[in-house]
Length: 224
View 1 (cartoon, one colour):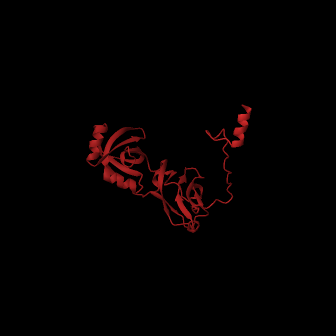
View 2: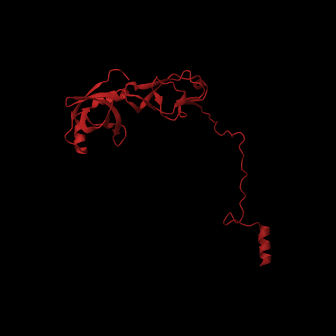
View 3: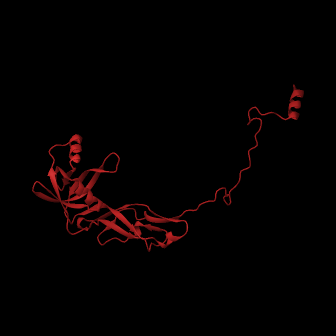
């Protein structure tokens, strides 16, 4: 995180409810709340373009100014629209810069490992965010992962080198990236070692309406 915390101007919201917040967003404002550290819950509105731009850059901490008061706040939760592709509400939690918190940080993958250059190899990124624990002042905007010298075919959370003071909370055995080999079979080619099942012999009981052999028919007549 940059040593300079960006300032975000906020306006108090006196009216609440879904109908009012919809009108608020139509004017380019984003509804939000501020809470935590024993303070009252405050409903505010912030500039939608500014907050979305900051979130895309991976910023987590803001100096929120409202009603002549300035507070250091951490983005605690984002609420999305019903399609899940747009932020419609932000929850801010009051913090201090030396407070230890757990946050999700975006992963930025660069480079290609040698193992991914083999014929039929495909490089996949299993996760896009990593949960870390650190002081508020040490929260990274993103975590840069250079895959050029990735050992083997899998890079796990435990193998990731993080900045001092930043610790991964996610499962250490979880894969961040992996190289898999895709094998394509030629059309109509038999698979080696496959067992070919013998065709099923239909009997009179299995095949309804089947005609019995002539010999069997004569035997049946003699029995009658």
